[in-house]
Length: 443
Image 1 (tube, rainbow, N blue to C red):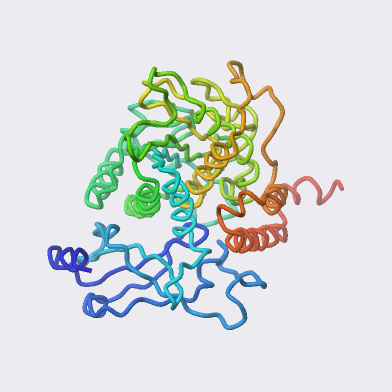
Image 2 (spheres, one colour):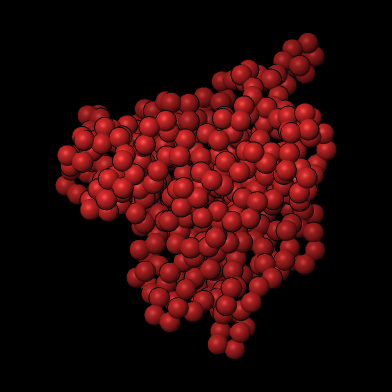
């Protein structure tokens, strides 16, 4: 706690937001006065909080049992940061979840990622990840039944066409992005490039590459930061995978490589600079197992609306060199920076679980010595669908994949799928405007 105490004193902190990422990636926790936080008593919360659905419901068959027990939340000193938008000096710190005997809570998203990273460590490997997050800025919309619209920029007009890579279109929201960068700098989130994506008022911010757990923490906090900043500029920022029907969806692309812990070299590259066997095995693992972890990469009913032909999103797990139409792209790079870009995950995913899942796929490919298909150098949108088309199909595939359950933890998989099943059933009760428009008087 020395690092935390020094931080609290240095910044004259008055209260601390103690947070835990739940299954969805929402920050759950408590706001505690500094005096009580420094007193040293660990925060407690019900374990069931972790399996809460995005609608606030809980599965009937809870993994916590009938007694609804507490868990102990332990602050990670490396995660303490300021909350730049708070009125009084306030800190936030991410917590790990353990039982009273000190054993990890297996359904905790942060633990699932730690579990996968430990498997890499036992092999003498250190995975490296660089995420890219796409999101939309939209006008404030208090009625969820109304379609979303782009916000008004500094010119007093909303975007009416697509402005991919337009500097002027980004400058429409200069004041917003200045605040985002300032808030991120104050939190040491280390964000990198900002671009305007294909959709109207769709943006992308890239992160520098690094340790997966550290990156997952930063993505988790970044989403919260962007939403807060947008609200202060009288607009919403949304990380929905497909928020508008006539615009492309938003992804979280993940660039992945693996370093040999002892030599510091990229194991995807041989000494002569050519691609290694492990490189192709990693790709093969992604091809084999990504369809089985789609409930993590595409966690909601809405997520599958993004994964459609000719919409800047993949529909299969083919791979290719500098080919953006495939699910697995190999960017042009030096031999030392050779990496695999997973383009499947939507930005609506939980970053801890998404990174755990994609690294688990690659790990299985390398440990099972799987063989990749030939690379694709044509338009992969013309090939058949290989990814599940809906959440129901995806959940079935995940439930039946024993190798993945062994890596991520069977208890986690069962609990996660129960949460997704409940969300799916809740959605299925809703009668949409499309049904009323086309079926009410014609069916």
